[in-house]
Structures are given as C-alpha cells and as structure tokens.
Length: 137
Image 1 (cartoon, rainbow, N blue to C red):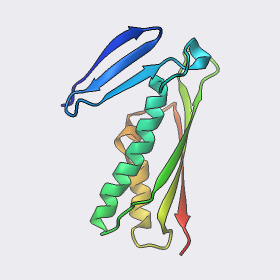
Image 2: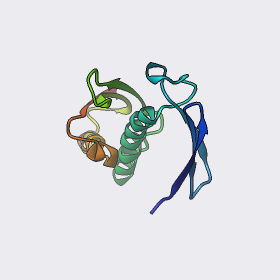
Image 3: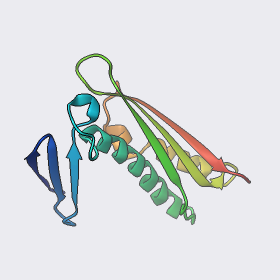
C-alpha cells in the first residue's frame, strides 16, 4: 500500500506528497478549465502515468530477456472529451525503442506495453492507442 497526501493551496493549485519517498509534485487546473496551466493538471498526470508505466513495464519485461532499454523514450498525447462529463477521451502513446523489431524480445515487449497496470486501470471508454517505433536493424 502506498499513501499519497495532498493539500489544496488555493487558486486551483494542489501539492501532493508521495509517502514512501517524500517527493512532492504540484498541480494546476489547465488553461482550458479555468487554470493557469502552471503545472501538470490531474489529467496530465494520468497521461504521464500511462507513458511511464508502459516504459517501466517494458523495462521489467526486457530484463527477463537480458535487454537494457536505456534510450527508450515516449510521447503521450491527451485528448479531452468535447461533451460532458469532462473526461479523457483518448491517449495516444508513441514509444521509440532502442532495439529493432527483429530482436527476439520485440514481441514480448510489445505485449508488456499493452499490459501495463495503468493501461488496464483506465476506463474502457478511454481510447488507448500505442505505437512502437523500432530502431533500425
């Protein structure tokens, strides 16, 4: 179990503290929803969680195959619904892999990307698109 504590600081800003490490992150409402956009919004953190979870889950799977994924990088694009209730409607993730698609670990890593816990935790109505870009052989 992990405990996250937080405090509303006013002006649509919050600070959250990660219990085990003491790390603090700040949030702000996005500009399109009355905020200043001065920090991650709560829904930005969901997109961030997806990207980092995919990368981490793939790296864990890669270890089983003796592969180091240093250099992997990703981009997640978050789209909000136009209707109500306001929600994330689509998350598009691009992952640039440091190994070629012909590598023996490629298929298990692709499965790991689609099997990350955040991916499974998102509502089924949230469209989740993952594209892997493999290094040249």
